[in-house]
Image 1 (tube, one colour):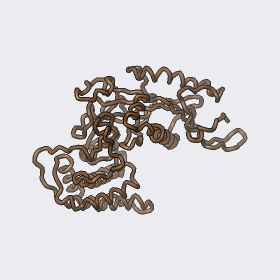
Image 2 (cartoon, helix red, strand yellow; image 1 turned 120 degrees about the horizontal axis):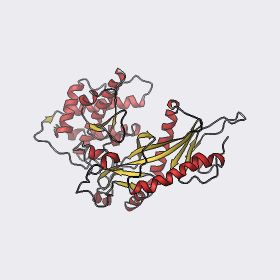
Image 3 (cartoon, helix red, strand yellow; image 1 turned 45 degrees about the vertical axis):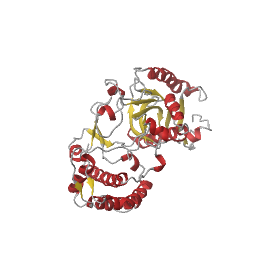
Image 4 (cartoon, helix red, strand yellow; image 1 turned 180 degrees about the horizontal axis):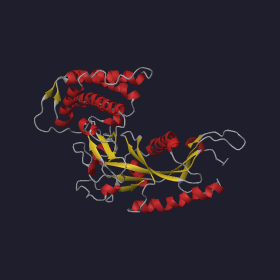
Length: 408
């Protein structure tokens, strides 16, 4: 995980900064001050527990808890103020966590509040300060809303797949003890939920050329649900990891919503129907699809130089997305040569047509750019020198809606 010493320190700083922001959020939630009024679920959503704001969730006390001095809020405010300055002054030296002198003591008090239900002394008098500072941080840190309060991180062995070895962790010492063979990333604590249950979305895309980079996006995707209702009170893999290889071995919780699929999978068309039932039918075309395309294009452009490429070959990828409560997609990971076994009725609907359409793109399109490519959409083609030495224009999915691309 930490190949270099500075990487470990960077993670410790990130963990500490997330804890500081978590304290500010705790102050708002405890004193019933919302930071996210615009994404609070509708009455219908609340009744069905389709999307839950963690500011509405109950934090259970685990036995008698002590009172933590208000100094922890002051320390968190100072650290967040330094962090805000750091984010808005890129030319300055890194001063993250400069406001936290005694990190060990701060983290210890943070654990008392978040893990053991302790209260912070006189927190009500800091509400306005916390609200103002968090609002400023939101403008420069898009991930602030999904980070939550509990500082949960998800870890997985670097060379394993199909959900093997994945664990959620929230202890700094525990995470830092992991070796180089582990990958750790921040867990999204405030995901969009469907009927109170976590899900992710698998989106396939195809690359038919790396030079120029050419990306095709498949119009059908599928959702994978957890077998258990969502909660942050437990870090159990069954609740937080939606990978089908894991969930198919588990029994669905008896208290799950009856509208959830027994096989824990939805076709994207079913998800769109669900969005209509909660009055959010427009977000699929206006937020979700454009957001996923943008994330994939930028990611593949950034990693292209590291790819071992053979001419006249193609690559199929599976990308996994979670969504924030505002329906904004967040890219979790991209899998090379993803499994496309037809284990469920949903996969039977998606895989055979996708394979057939993939052959159309790889074989037919090469000879006839106007051929039928089925469910694939060309969303990006990188600028490239033509045979006449002329640089063709880079084209994104917005351009491609109105432009036909011919091979150079």
